[in-house]
Structure formats: structure tokens, C-alpha cells
Image (cartoon, rainbow, N blue to C red; front, side, top):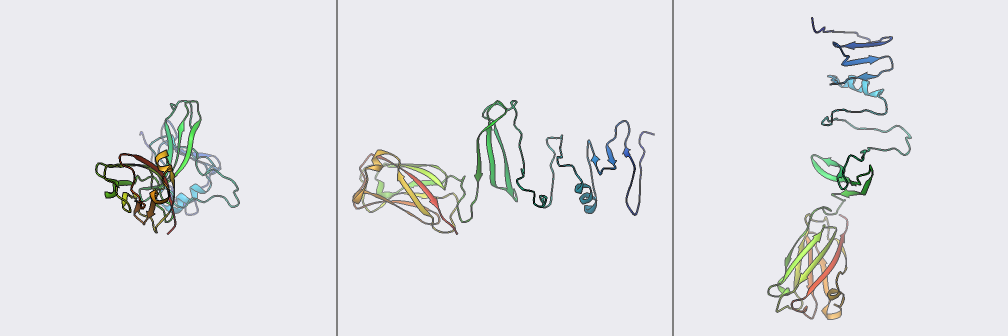
Amino acid sequence: MKRLIWKLMVAGGLMGIGSMGFGQTTVPLMVDTNGVVQAPTNFFATNANAMAAVLTNLNPTVTLTNGSANIQLGQPTADTNAGMIVFMDLPVTSAAAGGTVQSYELDLNGTNVATLFGQANGGGGVTNGQLKVTHLAGQTNLVGAPTVAVGAGAGTGAAVTVSGSDLLMQVSLTTGSGCTSNSAQATITYAQPFGSAPLLIYSAANTNAAWLGGITNVVLSATTTGITLNAGWSPLAASTTYKWNILSGGAQ
């Protein structure tokens, strides 16, 4: 007989003075008197209370040797008055080539809301460590890329580009011919709308934009969905590139 199946039914529980194993040559499941459960392959508990009882006395470190394994948990809770603790760690060794992304993310219902991101330096360390937040209360999608369109006031043949995110972006406008005053030069659309019209902080990003002022100044206005760049009482110069850095922020 290659396999021996045991069925133990004990109303008060299972107690022992040593270890008990079930298996053939090796012991696939061992329960010892210290409450330790060792399962080289799989461990199943069909009763929620039984699983809770097993997890109660787990050692501080639980290691899964199968890299594709998943753990499904309920509400994790730290010890009372635990002080400063590490929620999770992602070890990086010299085996990871320099520049390799090392990250893990927090998802809600399959949608990323935050990512802890870094890059291996090739020597067992990490560089460029950062927290990327996808959503802030009342704020836009920080990693979403806004879009931009040329306004009629920028003239015939004008072009505009935008880089960055909804939170912080740079706009580059190259005017065409026949620019007009008191008109939209460009319109930016957020990747995700704000809960309320955000506050804007912006500054010139090149010399041409820095020289604007007074009646030639370009004024930015924001709604929940985007930003409009408006020319002042004097039109912008034709065939000229202007750049601005724009920071959007606000609350619901």
C-alpha cells in the first residue's frame, strides 16, 4: 500500500507530545507541540476557524518558496503598541541588473491606487525610490497624461505639446501666423477631472515666455476638466515658441 489515509475526529482537538506526519518518504505536513505547521507543498483548511487557529501562532516570518504563489488575507492587524514596523519588504540583490524596476502596488478592485517604485543599482541596492500615488482625494490621476489642443488665437499653423502629468506638466506652444489677442491659445484636458476647479501655479519655462508681461501676458484659467491659456490685450508674436510649467492642485 503506497498511501495510508488517516481520518481523525477529536471533539476537543488534537494534542501530541512530539510531531506527527502524514505521507510517504517525506513528511508533507507536520504539526509539532509548538504549534508549528510545516507544509512543503500545499496546506488547506476548509474551516475559517481552523485557519484562524493555525495562523494565530505562526512565526514572524512566513516564506513561500513558490514564486507564483498568492496569499489571500482578510484584515491584517499589527501587534498592540507595535511601534515602528515594516509593512512589507522587497529584497534586492546584485543578481538584478542595474536599472531593473523593483516595485509593488496597492490595488482596489484590480485598479492601481499607489505604487512603491525603485530601480536596482546592480550591486544589491536600490536607487530612485519613490511613492507613486495614482489618486489623491479631490485630485486628478497623477500618472495620467493630459492632452492639449491648439486654440484659434494661436494662429494658422500653430502647434502645441504637453508633457508630464495632471499634477505637474509643461506646455510648449509654437504660434503660427495671424495670432489674435483676448483669445484661447491652447486648451489642456486633464486625464481625470478634479472634484472642483483646481488652483494653478505656473511659471515661464523659456525666455520667450519670461518676457511676456502686462498686455502681452498669457493668463491661465482652470475648470474641473482642464486649463485654458488665454492671450492678453496684445497678441503673441508669430512663429515663436513659448513654454510654461504648470502645477494644478485642489480639493473636493
